[in-house]
Image (cartoon, rainbow, N blue to C red):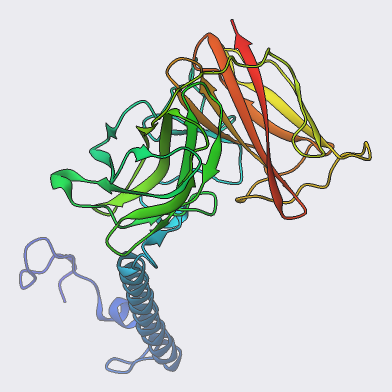
Length: 347
């Protein structure tokens, strides 16, 4: 064999090696060493195993993706955790604003002068459509309404937020007669509940909900007026104070809301025995706070921290603007829901 290692019979660019090099040294030509045979079989088996494992992994990913994508809404509602874009943690304190945005202290900075809801009949492509807006004073009547999407078709799928798919607030224009209700929805998308409006006047109904439209969540708050015929004698708001006495309880709050920063508010419920009352969870929390502005009834719905602080319910609130507000605090003791209310003036 020529000494020149370059061979004319090799393809261009190939490098010639000796047969001994190809066979691994001193082993006879045409025979694969026993150790190499075993190594080859082991390597081949490992390669097949890797292919099988990766194929199984890929099929598993495919099956999981399909199952998640095809999971339907149950009973016309979905959990927020299952909805696209719903990153809000309900167990943490948060505020619902007019566009449906949910602000949480510590997660995202709450706006200076929080946004408000309930001022519009239509928002975000959704419209509140009451079947009737006229009521008789002191008489139970059926309040029925729909939420219409584009083209007027009723929305029939909603997310369950704080244990309910829709929260309904009803209050008279002078901020008396507050009610926090939870209507039920028929299969055709009509919501209904029996409602008694005690005195003549104009009342505001505010629907707070998260609809599922085209597979996406649309959280919003819509409002409409209800009329009770008769002589309307508006009442002046009580003077600002920090204590209210619903039923046999004394309820007080600490903290001063303002428009420049999110401030803590702590609610204390004391029983007739002078001891801090044992609160029951109500709608997934130890209390709910609705704040409404005098004049236009701008609405803010606030939810507290998940745990009590020395027996107190702790909220975080940014006031929407300066002005006079009425704050309504719902709480539950021994299975009974009560509401405390205060007037607050914010500079």
